[in-house]
Structures are given as C-alpha cells and as structure tokens.
Length: 487
Ligand code: NAP
Image 1 (cartoon, protein in one colour):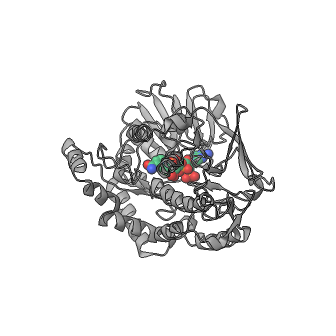
Image 2 (image 1 turned 90 degrees about the vertical axis):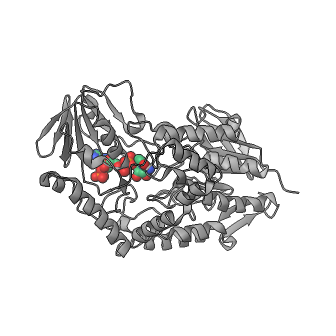
Image 3 (image 1 turned 180 degrees about the vertical axis):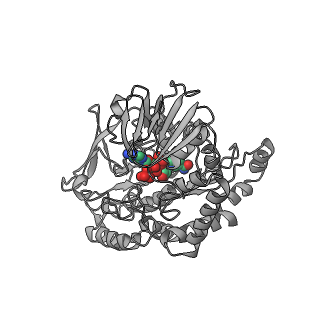
C-alpha cells in the first residue's frame, strides 16, 4: 500500500498551485500551501503596473491541463492572467488548502521530517517540501544618490501606486527591461511628459498585436485543436527551436537571424537618426532577456516622450541629474529596475539533514541539481529554482516538467523504496561543472550585463536545449541520488 505523505508547498503562485493540483489528482490530499500574500497568482498578483502583459502567446501561457479559449489577445494582459489563476484555483478547490498571509520563516529537516515555522511562530510538519517561491519577487530598488529626497512619489514597478495620477504629469521611468518597455508603451499615452532613462539600450523584437474577437474565442472553444496549434503547432515549435538554437550558441545562424530582425525593426521603426543611434545596443540581440514589443518604438517617438541615455548621477528633489550634467524635471519616478534574482527561497532559513544551512551551499550562488533538488536536503524540491531554463519560454511548461521529475522521486517514497531522497554532492558538482562550461558559450555570456549573470559574469541558467531539458526531466537518473531509509 502506498505510504501517505504530508506535503508543504511554499507559494501559491503558478508553480505552487500546479503542485497542489497535481497532488490532488494523485489522491495526495494532505498538503498545505503557505502563501505570504493575500491571494493566488504570484507575480501576476504582485505586478499590476500599466501595460502589464505576458509576452509569451497567451494560449501557451496556461497549464497544459487547463487551457483557456477566452483570452482577449494573442499576448494576454496581466489582469486577465491573474483572473485565470484565480479561476483555476477555484476550479480545483485549492483555496481551502492555502494559508494566505502566512509566510514561512524556516524549514528544518529533523528526524526524517520537515519542521516548518511560520513568521507568526506557528509550526507544521511534513514529509516533503515543495519550494515554489518564484524568482522575481524581491524588488531591486537601485542605490541612486538622493532617491529618498525626491519630493514626488517614487515606486517600484512591482509596487505600483495607482493612487498617483499620471495624466499631465512629468513621469520618469528608470529601466528598459521587459517591464520598463511595457510601462513606457502604456504610460506615454497619458503622461504630460515621459522621460525613459536607459542605462543601456535594448534590442526590441517586433511582435504582432492581435486581439481575439468573439468569433475567435468561439473557434478556440469549439475546437481545442486550435489551442493546441498555438501551443505546440509548427509555428510554436519552430519559434522554440530557433530561440533555443540562438541562445545556446552565440555563433549560430539562428541568432544571426534574430539579430537581423531586431536591427531591421530599429532601422524601419525609428525615423530620427539621432534617436535611432541612441536606441542601438552595442551587444548582441538576446544577450539580455529578449524584449518583445509592438508599441515601444511608437511610444518613444511620441512628442511627449524623451529618451535619456546614460548613467544617472543623482536624484534631486525635483528631478534626475545625469552624469553628463543634463537635468530632467519630474513629478513622479517609476523604478522598472528589476528584481534581486538570487533570492529564490531566501530569506527563509533552510536546514538540511545534518543541520547545515542552505545559505552555506549557496554562498557563491544558488545551486540545485538540474535546478530541482539539493544534496543534503532530502525530500526538498524546487520548482522554477536556480539554473532552470530562462529566456522567452513559458515558465508554466518548465514547472510542469519539473513537477513530473519531482513526482517520480516522491513516488519512490510513496512506494516505500526509501523514506528520503536527495542527490549526491558529486552529482551536483558534476552538473554544475558541465552547466558552467556550457553557459559560457550561451548568448547570455556574449558581452552585456543582465540578471542572468552571477557576480563572476557566468550565466546562472540552463545552457542546453529545451529538448534536453525535457528529456532530463522525463526520467531522473537514480544513480545520482541517495535513497535513505528510516530517516
Ligand atoms: P530587468 O530585465 O532586470 O531590467 C531592469 C532594468 O533596470 C534594466 O534596464 C537595467 O539597466 C535597469 N537598471 C537597474 N538598475 C539601474 C540603475 N541603478 N540605473 C539605471 N538603470 C538601472 O527587470 P524587468 O524589466 O523587471 O524584467 C525582469 C524579468 O521579469 C524579465 O527578464 C522577465 O523574465 C520578467 N518579465 C516578463 C514579462 C513578460 O511579458 N513575460 C514582462 C515583464 C517582466 P541595464 O540593462 O543597464 O542593467
């Protein structure tokens, strides 16, 4: 008879919800999802800035088992995605097993089980912990001199203050990753004047702006094969293959093709040669996460929009001073300056089977064997953990594949083959050595700064093909695992 296990899932975002749903489907009903926020959806709850959308095709950005014919556009707006996750949580009756507003402070593996403490001092115990905390949830507020003294409102993109009116105001947006580009595209329509502060320009991949009419939705409703076509049809497969080939080999013809598309987009879209040169990056396309936008180049050519390229010297009470001495008077500053991406499960205290801390293992940078498991930390599984695939893939597919991998290991415990399982340190070290070597050949290492790089400039990402990722996740190599009895 299968052993009944108790699970604790950390985070009710996309990946934590996935774990809960999959457990229920298996008949593993003894689990609690701890969520520090007051609702599900993770990043889609935290981000609600103007222009928020997902630049992955909406039909691909769903669970494989809960597709959605109702998307209003090829690229879904953020509020619709949040509503989707709310709807899925209701459909799978997950909320009754989620402890909202309850943050986990520590997880300690003691006498074969995980003892978990919440920040309000409560305790819980489980056989298995699934850490589904996400990556992009600790805002990076830049250390710019004078920022605190600015007389107007200042907020990070993930803490957008909708009470602050923007119409007819002078708005400064710092940062031009995917977030900054989406904000500028939207806010430029309402601001009196918008200044976009770019420390370094971005390549912009053009993309279609397709809205779905009622008849399109009916067609998706009536024929699920149409949804499958968007998710996995020839176009999607070709896009994925092209992108994979481009990122894992900086000398590939596929990257050359992406480069050409981005260069043509810049040449054909920006009329003023001076602005065009301002917006031309000096590194390769896809070196930073590729920014997709149908509207950004139009936005920066509006008469009320100014692009300030270069380093910021300081913030003064009424605006931003650049290192070149120029000054931009502002009423509001929005920080689209990204996230502290090396956090993952931090600041939680995680202690393994010898009482050792995860911090110790992660001193250099966060590490996990094939991005999912950690030596010395049995029955502990990360979804969307460190060194998984990044770029413009859908993180939902990635989490689903990682769940299938984790579930096969958990099944060994269910079946009584072992009580606890963790990879060996040798396996992690071998994985890291191979991964690091391959990462140096990826486009992310081709000469730009980005959140993919660690402090030594090595991309902390999956450096191989997406097909290889799927193959590895499909069947764990048990030779790399230590299976323990009577822990
Ligand atoms: P990001 O890609 O890390 O970009 C941060 C931006 O802030 C960069 O332009 C950076 O400049 C700038 N910056 C940081 N510190 C600065 C400083 N002190 N002075 C001036 N500029 C500064 O962050 P993000 O745009 O929030 O995106 C993060 C990730 O979220 C994305 O890569 C993506 O994975 C995800 N995302 C996805 C979508 C989607 O549609 N799927 C949308 C938004 C976000 P440098 O480039 O010069 O460092």
